[in-house]
Length: 87
Image (cartoon, rainbow, N blue to C red; front, side, top):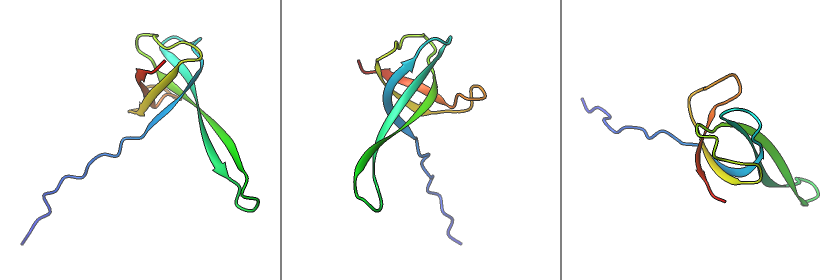
């Protein structure tokens, strides 16, 4: 009886966005913009969503472009971890 020994790879969700707020301790608020096309009028517009990201060293400042990935729940709102600061 053959068994399936292939491991399934975990899908890592990663985003890049702009830091909107760095006022909390070890937490930054990051805005991620995406372009959406309207179904009927075919006009493109920008949708924004904000994420609370864990910043262990408090290195990201307001206006920086950062990359972050999904992780285990750190607090009630934080499920994201800072990977790198781009600018």
